[in-house]
Amino acid sequence: MTGPGRVVDGRLLREVAPGVIGILVRRGADFATAEDAVQEALVQAALTWPERPPEDPKGWLVTVAWRKLLDARRSEAARRDREDRVAVEPPPGPAAAVDDTLALFFLCAHPSLPPASAVALTLRAVGGLTTRQIAQAYLVPEATMAQRISRAKRTVRDVRFDAPGDLATVLRVLYLVFNEGYTGDVDLAEEALRLVRQVAGRTDDEETAGLLALVLLHHARRPARTRADGSLVPLAEQDRSLWDTALITEGVAVLQAALARDRLGEFQAQAAIAALHADAPRAEETDWPQIVGWYDELLRITGSPVVRLNRAVAVGEADGPAAGLAALADVDPGLPRRTAAAAYLHERAGDRAEAARLYAEAARRAPNLAERHHLAKQAARIGQALRG
Amino acid sequence: MRYLLLKHYRGAPEAVNDVPMDRWTPAEVEDHVRYMDEFAARLETTGEFVDSQALSPEGAWVRHDGEGRPPVTDGPFAETKDLIAGWMIIDVESHDRALELAGELSAAPGAGGKPIHEWLELRPFLTAPPTVTE
Image (cartoon, rainbow over all chains, first blue to last red; front, top):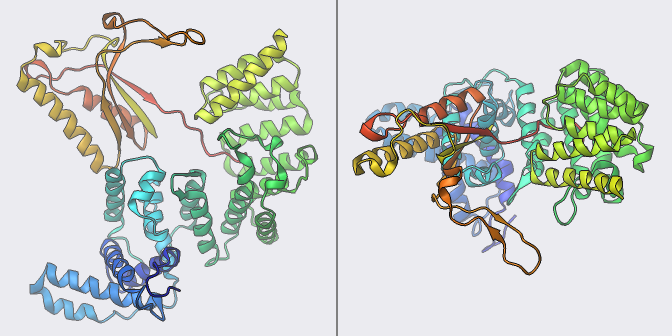
């Protein structure tokens, strides 16, 4: 992988390191200690691999990390060297029967952790990101993130590593990572895609496939989603030639295989909606009636107010703005983006004065500047037309 | 969830222990500042601290006044304005937790070493839930 003098391939390390932590934990180390030992081994790898690349990077890391772990134990409590001698021997166990990496996902997304901590721990231990990178991505100080991660490690310290964990929690955590988008030098969308692929490669669960399809299909549209100045491009106005057709093809194939097994879940339903958008060569050719059908499924599964809002917009496209506004009447008035959706539907219904008023109100309540500017522009556009 | 905690010089309702800071003893000021520093340090250890800054009591309203003309300001008439003394940003699990922390910060010691019970403004950052489609 590297010749003399070259840098160590960071991506390879990130692929391999989580499995190494998993092996150490299975041998009886607690999670925090195992992670520290692997970090030390990675430092040593960075120093020695450029000169002497190992034949088997993972095996090398396991050996070195295990040695570091024993060193740490010895210096910590030299008087307990009798126990240390026992610890040198890997305890017998069903090591081959369980996938270490998947078990590590379960541990990092343990239900006892608050979601923000589970996300951080997953990115750290399974994703191999540095604490600084995670802190930057989530816009908190590095010290804050370091404490959040070490608290999370303490929380899972005594969790046994033998029972299968809750896959739904893992998927939820990865979905949160993906939804953060990206900032700074860490692309969380890329990272989420990489991690979802890892999980999907280790289980034949339909919802995992659904999430993978969803991430692929959303990710495929990213090049078209923002202009050079950072402003948003609505789906209907996106230049579809910029969409990544390879990702779309893969996403659709993954989704179809999952749907064929007839165990629908919310990620599969969301992916189906994304696939219908991806399938339309032009916005006007979008199959809205079918999209409404999938929103009905999604609403039945989740009961989520966000889904209800999105469904109302889809109904507006399928059956006209009056039907959309009627569907919107069932949506909680306090929900973010509800006002923007109402403004859009009123404009399509021909009520421009009300649309302008609602766009202006939506702009004041917008959760970020890009959206606020976009909505303010809509209000200004209609206002100008009304005056002129 | 992120919240902004705003401390006011003026503009907020009167605090219970409402003695202007320039009439505190240096030790009282020091205790007050230490309380806030320790509060921030503790939130760092819980992973809830994001940022905090103090602001000067001088401020001016500024407005564009047409091309090629200097911006209009209202001048340094600080006594007529609502003034922000500083802010802290926290990132917490729930609104209840944000209230709890704001309450705690409001109890910082003031004149006579007694809690000032000052009013703090608690403002959530606007965030949208994850979208289903675009």
